[in-house]
Amino acid sequence: MPQTLDAAAVRDWCRLSLAALGQAREEIDALNVYPVPDGDTGTNLYLTVESAAGKVEALFTDGAGAPTLEAALRAMAHGALLGARGNSGVILSQLLRGVAASVGAGPCDADGLRRALRRAADAGYEAVAVPVEGTVLTVAAAAADAAAALPGTAGLSAVAEAAFEAAGTALALTPQQLDVLGRAGVVDAGGRGLVAVLGALADAVSGQSPMGPLALATPRPVVVHATPAALLDDDPTGPAYEVVYLLDARDEAVPGLRARLGALGDSLVVSGGEGLWSVHVHVDDPGAAVEAGIETGRPHRIRITHFASAAAEQADASHAVGLSPTRAVVSVVQGEGLAGLCRECGATVLPADPDRAPSSAELAAAIRLAHAREVVLLLNDAELRAAAGVAADQLRGEGVRVAVIPTRSPVQGLAALAVHEPARRFDEDVVAMTTAAGATRYAELAVAEGESWTMAGVCQAGDILGLIDGDVAVIGDQSEMVTTAATVLDRMLAAGGEMVTLIVGEDAGPGLADALVAHLRRTNPVVDAVVYEGGQGAAPLVVGVE
Image 1 (cartoon, rainbow, N blue to C red):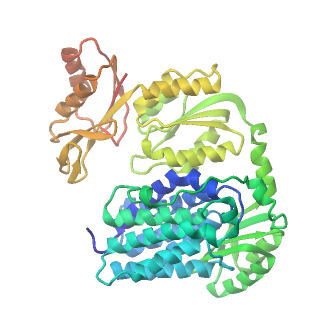
Image 2: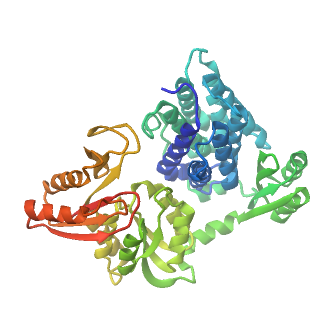
Image 3: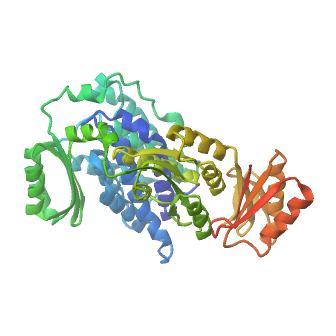
């Protein structure tokens, strides 16, 4: 178990945080009653961490070699600052900035993590003009206190786990500290998001599976009986607008901006430093809030939301104009061959990079490009479910009816496209496509990147892995690609099957498809086989059995 945090662990922290927030996003949205019950805290936190994870991932794929711990933490904080959404996202970006500032050039051992958690909590309180207890700030402080209370002999993993557990305990107490939470019967939404991020940190430093402790220790919310509209009526005099922007400004000019914006409204959070700041405030005069930014520096990425209008627009989204009455299918695929197959079936294609999953923004853009009132989204990758959920919610707010079919493999996507019928009612079409995808078992070959434990035993770098339904079932030597693939086929067909689809990738060995077709003719002559040149880079071979 590592005794110091490194750049690879920061990368894992980002990935696990994104997965945790993706899983909890809708739950957190439902908890959102403070400071404004607009039901978007989970989505805002997901988008903030998605931006942070993207900046960290870029460090590992830019060809410059492995980044330092300092570079990884700074990239995480910077990405969060650039992508911060809503009050919760801006506060989280400041917490991450506090961690990066505390660790610096490192190293970050158990004591270093204690200091980083304390600096993060302090930075959060400093960013908020009027700190309120019973919020994410309280949860951050409790995590830092618990880490500091451990004996000096505690290791890095113990500190991270103590912070996570204390955050969960503090979260459960937030309804007792903030009246609006108590009346609604929920815990604080931003605090719930921070618990997810701290759970991901504990997993990253301990090497446990994603969501390992999170699912066990996070308090479940009480059922909300009040509606957002009823809660809004509790404070009809609250500011009408949310104003958010990035600001290029000298650090010494920011205190004056804080004072000016504080006099204009509430829910003021200003995070950042070193010339770049993220500003969030609720006001009745959005022009004055932007003007204050102009007089301080250069505001950009300005977003102004009128709370009442936003709610009305979402309710009337079904009447959106400018959309074609037709239905479209958007399919996410790797490889030009697979993309061509999907286009032939009438799908709009979002090409996927084997080294980087598309973001929620890219998925949303692909749905918009379809210019349809009804869209079916085929993911073809289990890792895209969270990002797709965020994108779908955004487009539904714009009046597009979106159904996400969580296909885990391109062969499932092709099976769904094969039964797509635009003349059917939308719900019936989605059910038919989902059923076809679910009836298609899938497998693939992959090349092991390093030594690892799997369900089939220990693999070494360069070994050929045969995965069935996402789990490693066969391990073969790099010279045994055909043998490994044949074993995978035999195991899949042992449960029955009438049609085998083979999608050959760019790294497939010569003659792989021909050898497998010949093997099928010898062992299962009644099974039909079809071969496509997919061109995907991630998997030498993808297999489907229907």
